[in-house]
Amino acid sequence: MTAPAAVQQILFDALAGQSGGAGQLVDLRQVRCPVFVVAGAEDYIAPALCVKALLDHVGTEDKTYLELPGGHISLIAGRSASRHCWPRVAGWLAERAP
Image (cartoon, rainbow, N blue to C red; front, side):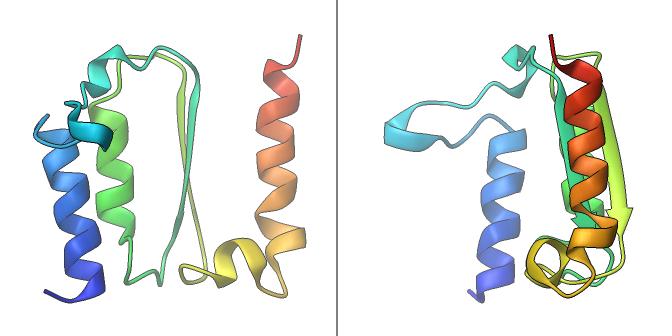
């Protein structure tokens, strides 16, 4: 199995409640904290559609999806990350700060 396929399988298993760390099942419906998911449009390790699907399964009402140009690493560490990704993350966090 290739690395992207393995990552997709882990996500699919988690969504189905069939995997988890240390032998624990993952029940994403129990996630009640705010969730912010950022996907790279050219990410072949964690494809945007798979990343976005996570939001359909978490229990929180406060969930945000953002898709930006870039791949798996360039999204957060590339030349444009400081202009496109991190300001959006910081803004989302600031809106929820006490």
